[in-house]
Length: 388
Image (cartoon, rainbow, N blue to C red; front, side, top):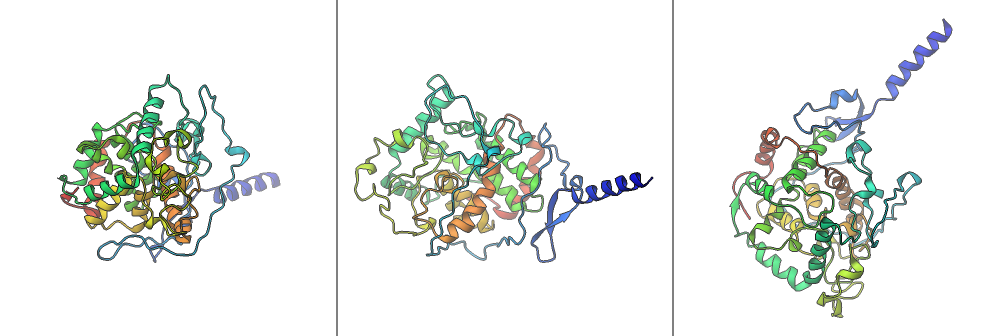
């Protein structure tokens, strides 16, 4: 009898302390942890045809999300530098993939952004695989896209594109209509998925929604983060729209994909104004003072500012820098960034990028069933017919 009582007591203790940590708002509108059954946080929506498995929500305790007041301005820089230490993979983080082709230097963001196995749907080491294989049509398409990008994306090219696209006179459209156009776009720089971009938009948004049901601005950020790719429908080649971004006007980051072979024809590499460590920049000038290669990130950021979005600044950071892999996952350019860049902006961008990268799969969400929810968020944060 005594043994039965002890066993029962142990079960009760385990059932209390083995609950996953989830988060809800307190009276000050700050998320804080609360032990509740995981079933109470599940959103019964017609989303994927697969189950996600258990996922513990990362901590957002004490993170205050500020809504902008009035017109949005560019990011605020801090002059003091702090270089983050590179993340060290543990023995459990080491994955191997059979290499049948020439290896190249490439960032492994999976060391920083670990998806749950039931969620990733394939080994994490197989994401962002930029090895060269002339017999693989997708890998060759990706390599050609980056070769064109790294040849033509110069300081002058980026400055010209900023002038062209920040006139916002190309077309007028709602966010929803622009997203629907992504049905016709397959990102030629993406080695992980060969589906229309709108599918990836909903995959990202819905996974964020499961983990952060109360942060509706985060859901919308996941949905629209790639909508700047509509530039591809207005005469821009994909190498000027998609792919990882990098800093122009100084030496290229060590972890830019295909770095050692793809920049040989870029004229800035022969210009002493631009081919040094600092190039045209001052030490620790800050992200907002850097000129990145032109693409959908920078365009969408400027588009949202121009159209007076009410999305919080954290959303704008995620949108503007989510493709800047050499910085946020490779720790490159720390000689140009500030303490705020490294401690605040980078934190939020990495929080987003786990969803952007590891939601790519062949499982298709029920987009039509999801539109009513996201239409309400569009109306809340970036409504109406907008200037693109």
